[in-house]
Image (cartoon, rainbow, N blue to C red; front, top):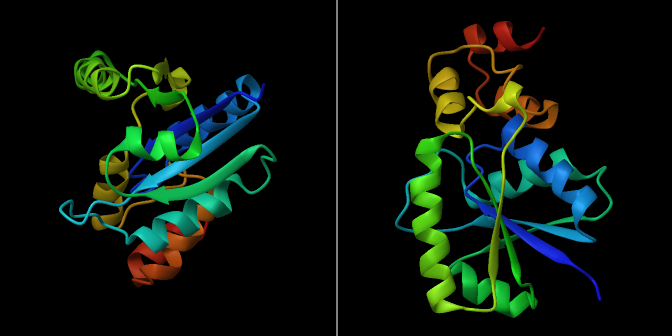
Length: 169
């Protein structure tokens, strides 16, 4: 029996914390599906296509990781893939309350699907996509927060001279 987990998220953008969880999950599960959520009601910094591109470029060397996108209910997506494990990350205690509520709602909707929580390495526990977006918005260097393919994508997209100079190092 193959054990597959889905790691869902908006990944707007993918951070080193996300990548840490993906790499660790790839050692635990036979297959990990990184599922980029597409929600037309949620305003994202990057388009769904851009987020998919950044995630794919960042995980391409991890053989048992696939990247996909989904809309609608996560449990419906999991059922369509015949996956019974949802992987979620917890950076801080504040994440726990939200994730706990989501896990209980998902359990009510799909009793056969389990949530498993992983914490990122301490060195990445403070990193969030919103922090990265804030740094990008203010022209700062994101090298310590995102994988190289994400940095490269963002530098190319935002070829603002002050941002590019700080990130070219």
